[in-house]
Length: 148
Length: 287
Ligand code: SF4
Image (cartoon, rainbow over all chains, first blue to last red; front, side, top):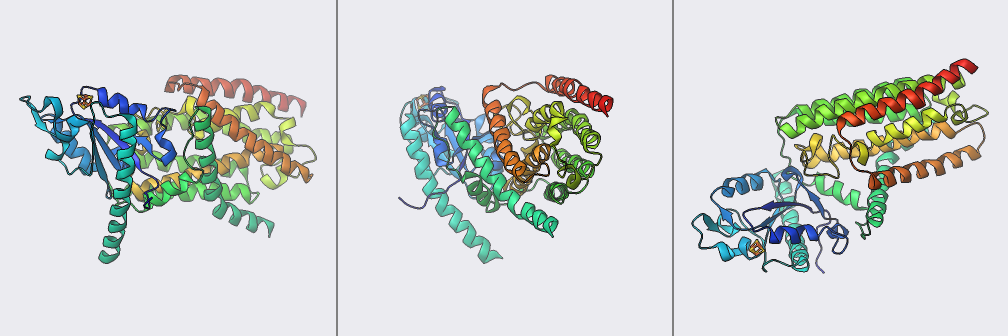
């Protein structure tokens, strides 16, 4: 296994999902799946988060919110799109108010498919995100050193 | 000489031991909830991550104020471990809290302001008992100096069990344990986001965490001086009972629901009046 980021704190935002995926995200924190064993901590605060987990597609109202949350998270950070709605817009893709997947407004690092995405898949996606997060951390360190 | 060693041991060891205790707390809590929980050293991974994050400062003051909080807590603890005046130590402890409140109030986030307000209420709820406790030590041992308090033939707790109970409640408030955790929302994390710490990110938040570790050790140090007396084995007893106290706080944290600030305030004052007040009265009568 590649070197994984050890202390990823997670922020969950519901773009415009049907709530199916959100319930699965919450299931990840329960004793059965327990994401805290990876050191993952479900915070509610963008200022302290490393991973942004978004469920549901983006509509014109949530667009600015998602952009703001993303900008409030300090570097290094990764974004995980959970559920097919967050990946592409899913069943709501044709709706007049839906812009599409999360990647229409902010860069996404990991896509977790499924409707709803299963907790196992979500955890797998997050663990993949950890690898990317670690790489970004190393890059960030190098950039800091080069800058200093 | 021993004083210097114990102060240095506190300054260097408290963050390490505090972090380790925090790790134990998280693991034990997870086991109580039927989960596996994070690795034991998770708090240190968290700290190292926080120090490596980008600094997103909302203002230039917050980092400085947090540093003041850290330094004052370290001084308060150092005084206790040097065997100096316990009254002074407690005063510095509450001054340290003031810096944290100002740090939280210095930014514009409404959540942070609510957190600061609630922290202020917590300080007000805790303060009377800490003062009574200092008075209790004086009435029992005839001195405010920690080095005299721990050199008595019998442990202070014999004369002040009520104050020890009261301090146990106050400790839960100071350590932000569940029934009284309304300033930072450790567990109910969506209520006021992260309360006091909402706008602290990266290194600023790490400094606040290290200060909390100093506080844990300081609190346990105060528990210890209730038990330590002139005999050598009382130190071992005190150490064991500190561990028990910390475990009980964790247990309490997991089995109780959070209180509203008004209940917290009333609860603390009632405990102070009943457990602390009666204890002090008895002490004054039998003196
Ligand atoms: S992917 Fe399915 S379950 Fe998830 S938000 Fe979309 S419609 Fe709901």
